[in-house]
Amino acid sequence: MLNPVHLRTLVEVVRTGSFAEAARRLGYTSSAVSQQISAFERAVGVTLFEREAHSIRPASAALLIADRGGELLAALDGFEHEIRAMVQGLRGRLRLGTFPTASARVVPHAVARLSADLPDAEIRLDEAEPDDVLPLVLAGDIDIALVYSYDLVPVTWPDELTVLPLLDETLLVLVPAGHPAAKVSVRLEDLRGERWIASRDGTSGATCLVRLCAAHGFAPRIAFRSNDYDVVQSLVSAGVGVALVPALGYKRSQAVHAMPLRQKPLRRHVLAVHRTANTNPLLRDALMALRSACLRTEDEFTHPVHRQQAP
Image (cartoon, rainbow, N blue to C red):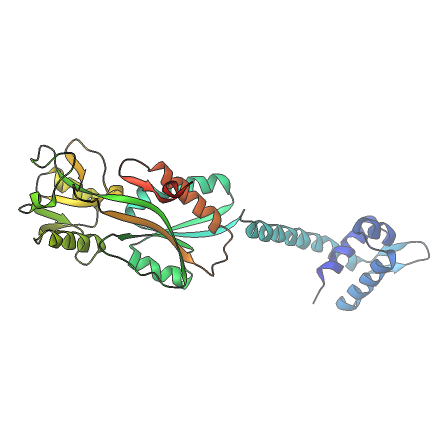
């Protein structure tokens, strides 16, 4: 096995033509340089320098090794630089998992900041619902994921995860513009007879709607289902039903009126999760970027958690 330290010494001796000058440049003694060259010769099994009383002459093998070795050392130096940059969080790979509404409203700003601050870092995105993305985080396939939980659908997170609250969203009732209930806020009982548009059966959003209506003494008459909030809002604007959506899923429109519940507003909570044991140095930068991105979404219905907790 060739020693890269000895290789570097050989390259410097060939470059300077002198053990003494190579020693001066490398910070060694002449004796140490001579010993390293001898060890290198034993490793390759050939004499590399013709030694005379006051000079040395490199053999052809030494010239060849120095030429190729210089390339290898340059590559090694670059590799070491990449490792140092990765450890310092300046380079590396970050795998980010996210859900659709966060992908549209939060993630682009976070990725833009990361790309500006860490131009050499590789950022990969995967989009999935929390139930699908959590196993990927636990398996180490994703470094950090955005997930959510609803007030009426609490979630217990695995002990292996660190969970950081980022954003609270008010749940909004969507009705067509001009609907009799289109006011500043609405009582859920006033929508008892409406047709509802909900997310897929079994999702947290659909479960939240069913539990909310049950608490007010009725079961929602769900006519349409879609996990795409653009589709949900389009159906509302077409006048075929009403819906309950998180604030990130609502886009302001003249055809749709959005309002919170008159009772205590319900919220969906956006959180960042990662394995506590994950040592990726980019995690800290990613969390800072996500927090900053959440600030950009702040309005009357979205509330960055760390802004609320700031002294």
